Length: 395
Image 1 (tube, rainbow, N blue to C red):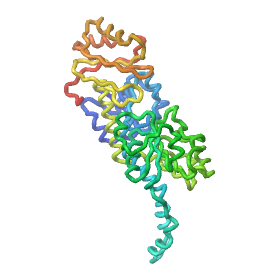
Image 2 (image 1 turned 180 degrees about the vertical axis):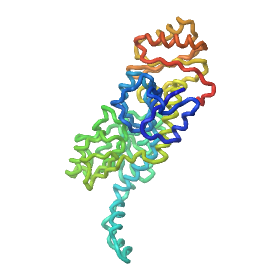
Image 3 (image 1 turned 90 degrees about the vertical axis):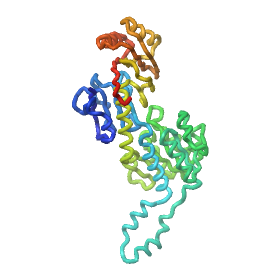
Image 4 (image 1 turned 60 degrees about the horizontal axis):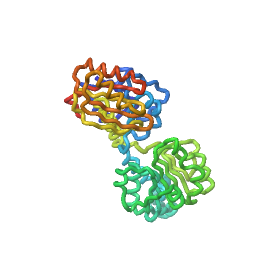
């Protein structure tokens, strides 16, 4: 029986994946897994029982990932599950940036009298805008969201340039060949009329757009940030807007410094706020967490590598260890010393840590317990778990 703890309201379509025969929800202070959305866990004391945290969303800056890694806790996210929702909001914001629709809608509500139609027609020119067709859009970050924005903007008739030195092979295949690839971020900043940022928040991307980058932009360029607030230097962008060194700024992250400026549009973090996105994220998070708990397979983790292996043996030993020489040999030797045969084994490393799956033909629970106890004594091993194969598991 697995114990799951939730933070925030998780869409029931996702929680329904945890069947009542094998899972209990919020019934223990020592859960095996945690599933959450935006709850901040930096001050949370993780019980030793926790082996995984699943974030129903792409960003994990609300989770102490380094701390989790050191404690042998796998952190999952759901990249791409809310990509369409964010993409649609970006496209809508592009349209709003060139067509003052919101202002026009608000103005019409101030009219009165039987000749409202004539009044509107006579004064509509004050809300004249421009068109996106033919304008240049720069997309910084070509992950799931950035790739979709680039493709749809091209279909709207924009000239699109994308920049991402780390674009994955899968994403590269999904991007239209009509999207130009920039080799330097400066190429995007200096040439584009609109620039939208879609990169994860890391130490390297914090204030990716700051004073030095803003000075490269056209004085008519419009900057958009639907990734994470800290990726853009707020004070620098306000100064650039006020000094008319850029044309405007749209962001999905509220900050007092950005308010009450007619050239700055602030949305209340609506990027993934659609029913469909919340359901998709919940389903993906729950499935990833459930797969890990039942099989040890890791897919879409931010702190450990993807590790998959068919589970055909009676038991599987999962091992999180420091990525040091001869660790695999030590693991195999410890298991062999207990007269247990290894059926299959796979290992992947990521930075300072590695993850290993070992399938054994042993069926005696006492011997399995002896294996985990012996491995746990190895100074290089952070966490060991034994999983009994469930023939009825969906995995």
